[in-house]
Image (cartoon, rainbow, N blue to C red; front, top):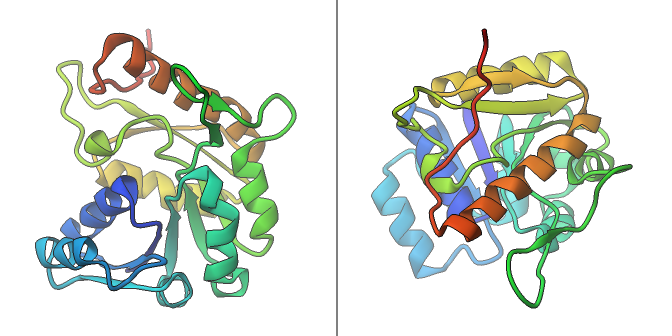
Length: 214
């Protein structure tokens, strides 16, 4: 499969490496394709990896991953051009965070809207699925915890797209909790915020969530 990663930060690079490790062709979309650090990422990731503009990456991908900081998300979508993502599954990894003067960031949206719903409005013809927003980049692929595989929560309006993303999560080493429509991003983004707050309070970022069943 051809995968577009829209965003070249830590999360985008980690997910790009993960898809490449599973044998997918990955194109990292960025504002700065000539950046030496991204060239190094390509060399380290291997022959299945490449870097391009947002628009070129979006055209290339059969599936796309949106992995931008929230402040740059709308502009990245404009640069990618929503027409290039029409009909495609788009995994929304973003959290709508705003920086605070002291302590951890805070959610910029909530209760009656979410970042996931906003992304779906910006990409009306794409099949947006919220996923990978409740854990840090180092644990996104093949997470290894003493209590067994953690769970990834997903939400999106299209059942087929959710199945596609669920299968990706399982291939990445996760259990999957399907919360239905994209409006459930209103709950997943606060879970992502809980992950962040715990990281700040514990000064440790090696944690993930798991549903316990009886």
